[in-house]
Structures are given as C-alpha cells and as structure tokens.
Length: 155
Image (cartoon, helix red, strand yellow):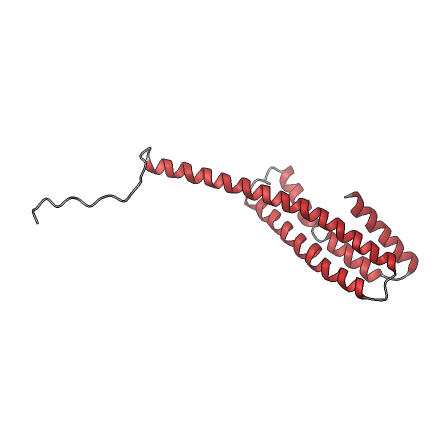
C-alpha cells in the first residue's frame, strides 16, 4: 500500500513539474482508485455487522471483478500503449511498470482472499446441505428407491 501511494504521489509531482504525461498519470490514478468505493463499502459493512451477508458477498465479488478487469485488464492495455509510444520519457515508463507490478502484488493477495472465502462458503454450504439431508431422512439412510411391492398373485 505504501509503494502504491508513494508511486502515485511521485507520478503526480512528475507530471506537474514536467508538464507532460498527465493523461497517463490520471489514467493510472483513476484505475487505481475506482475500486475504492467498494473497499469503503466493505469497511462500513464490517463496522455495522453486515459484512457476513449476501450484501457483503456481492461487494466482495464486485471488488474482485472490478479490480481484475480495470487494474489488471485495462491496466495491461494502458501499459502496452505507454511502452510502445515514443512520447513518454523512460522514467514515466518505469513508473508505469512499477505501478502495474504493485497492482499484480495486490491482485495475488486479492485472489488468495477470494479463494479462501469461496472455499469457506462452499464448505459451509456442504455442511448445511448435509444437515438438511440428515433431518429429511430422520436418521434413516436412504440408499435406494423404494421397492415395488412383490406380486402376491392376486392380480
């Protein structure tokens, strides 16, 4: 987080001092901060005790999807455009690579979080499903369909 904010501040200062590459810096800052409202929503849900709910799951899903799509997907395209363009100075390109590398560090951490949360939700679902099945069977294990009554010769 410290590297992200330090690079952002240095990028802003560099764009102001040089009077160029403002578009690149603004695009990076926009992409970096677009997920911030979802992070704030997660914090408010935690503080109010509503994080472990459907709303919390939706916010987490949207955060992971938006982060992946914007910071990694769109970020890759912007980095490519910056790298092939002759206009930005070399240190602007280095800063772009550094910010993208920081995004990947965050992404690995976020994917690990999402994986752990998904596995935990899956195990809770399986446990609930098993308990429901046991209650439905009332302690009797159903292994097959009920048999047809044997033919008693009456008909």
